[in-house]
Amino acid sequence: MNGRYDDLVALFREWRAFQSPGLVDGVPDYSAAAMAAQRRALPEYQRRLAAVAPGSWPIAQQVDYEIVRAEMNGLDFDHRVLQPWARNPAFYVSVFSSQSDQPAREGPQAYGAIELWKYQFPLTPGAAADLGARLRMVPPLLEQAKANLVGNARDLWLGGIRNIAAQSAELDALAQRISGTNPALESDVRRARDATDQLRVWLEQRTSSKTGPSGVGIDNYNWYLEHVQLVPYTWQDEVTLMRRELGRGWAALQLTEHRNRELPALVSISDPEEYQRRFHAAVAEYMAFLRDQQVVTIKDYMDAALRARIGPFQPAAGPREFFDEVHYRDPEIMRTHDYHWIDLAMMEREPHPSPIRRDPLLYNIFDSRTEGLATGIEEMMMYAGAFDARPRARELIYVLVAERAARALGELMVHANRFTLDQAVRFTASQTPRGWLRADGVTDFFEQFLYLQQPGYGTSYVIGKFEVEKLLTRRAQQLGEQFTLKRFMDELNGAGLIPISLIRWELTGEREEVADSSP
Image 1 (cartoon, rainbow, N blue to C red):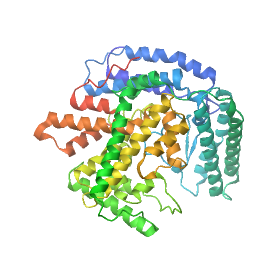
Image 2: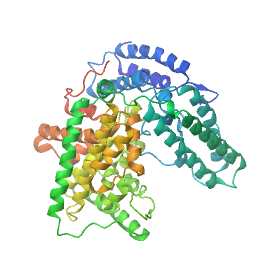
Image 3: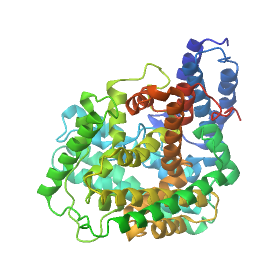
Image 4: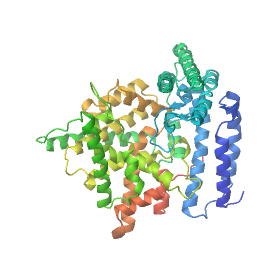
């Protein structure tokens, strides 16, 4: 193959088709034979990519080349290390009632997810037929899982049982929602739920035999950071950074609380009317700040993207989940993090011109950008003045800083096989201020189990934030008096949802943070 960019695009399209599993009667095939065949064929795609010579291309096209290489490395890692189809029962969960805030759903999943949130109820006959056809694929997929799941990773097994049970609850809720409307669809839902329950029982019966570790180990984690995530740090680097960030969050919180000690405490919203008023006011206030302070170029879809995610008021007899404890006290705080929804609206309304960046990258490679910016912008907006009128809001920012660092340390220790999943959950809860992240709550387990399944995801929030800050610094140094925050944010948006290390290379012309990603 010669070194033309068009050849890379053609190979990319072939690669994406190859990466998807084969279908047998419409069901994705993750059998041992199918996965072995895919693994044998992968080196030929890597060889073809290596034969491309992108060195003389514009940097933006060289960046696209690195994206394709990182994706191929991701599949290689799946076959050599993760093997989610054989080790992780949660891989076979395929029914989801809510939209992910990421370009693609977090963590490894079998092909053919059923995104219930895309359907409008009551269903039209066509939509009901489409949903029924998808649901009919669930029982054979879960039956296949019983043959494929031969791994010995105990925490993945236990967490998978919990996620499979959650799928049953999703299907039960769907059954109630469509009750009496469509007998054929009701039957499809019932069979999918029965198959889900049968798999849960099958998994539970084998739990006692699962005794092995679930983390990938430090060497594999380092390989993944360098060759798939394209992150310029090692496991040990990240442990050091997260410990420092955790200490910074706690110390800053104590000092800020001292400064604010004479001010009224922030009180959680307690009724639906106040909730709607304050959350919509928070969107208006935040959008006005972005516009008036010239933080970013405002597009007409941004306000709507944020308002669409407000959701209904949730009454609580006791403690709320962690993020609700934050934004029920100050709704604007998490509207900053909701930059995720601006990202997704931008991806839909203004597709990137590169065919390689237009659709979500595989293996959550986008997370240093998506999670990193959404996390970083919370504190960035605080420094820029967004919460000056509400000094106690700064306390919430530092609670968030500490929680993100604590959960990242949990991930790092689990993948080093120094913590079990349960130990990571309890550690993260104990290290998060104010007791808002509860070890017996939903959020703590959900996060730690996700990070066990997807190495590098839990650390991406903080590492990505650091990388965004470093990039902002470098652009300010390069541009001098020409630098503006609005220019920086527009450049960042324009590069697409790709690793921050690649965005840095494209914007600065400096490649030192992008290692040669070939194994």
